[in-house]
Length: 340
Image 1 (cartoon, rainbow, N blue to C red):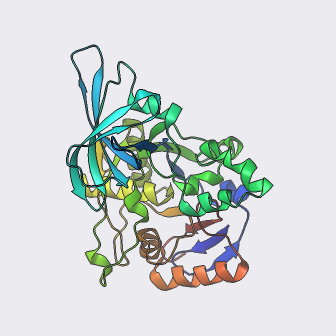
Image 2: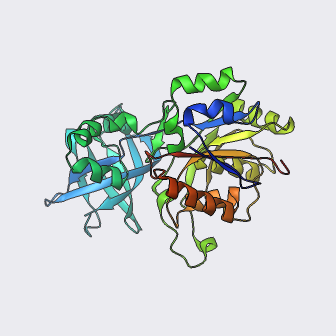
């Protein structure tokens, strides 16, 4: 783990297992407990030919009048063709009708004939966890280690505290934690709070606009429990550090503060917040994150938090030292106090 002071620019190397001792004293550590669900479905069209869906969010759930229900979802589709009224077939008799095309491969679908069971429950049986392309490519190389790991990814690509299904990608900063490390945080005098932000595919869409501020973030849903809102506001009032485990926690807390007039309020909401250098951080004082790719909104958030030059200098250090990037990569701890 690379440790960076965001005000002085000082850097150091550490092991993630030392995290409890490296955090500022009496910190409130906020986790994102979203869980990656088996959002990828492979099926067929009526005239033959395969189709692939990546479901991103449920829009509606309504009774069908026959003791079951109908769920409407949005997702991304491949090989869908142009048929305006398409009924897709999936394993286990599951069917979906395309009811709207939203552009850029996005579609709205109606899943019918579910009976009393939810689509999420069906997906646990027939869906696939949507692993990042570089992990899938490694698994397909077919070495014994890759083949063995492929069977574990359904659980490995989850944090140990994941509990709320709805994400298409893991909040990867949390992958470093074990139950024992969480216990160590509490034993060291830190407090733990939880929220949920369901990570969508837009988080990883690269910034292609000439001016980064013109990039539009896809909407992501989040929920802040009452206990977490109280804990965050109490920590801020007492001048205690608020440590975000991952950029998703940053976006949820900073969005809530902006919507709440500076106070973090409990409840459900959606965010399109895009944090660029020069942004003011109202809530989060310290951040644990992984290493991100160029032109990503995630790297830009890190640059906004630590300062562009300090962040880029830290990345140069990480590259020279052989730190691993991507989801299963190494971590970065960004701490510091003004004038410290």
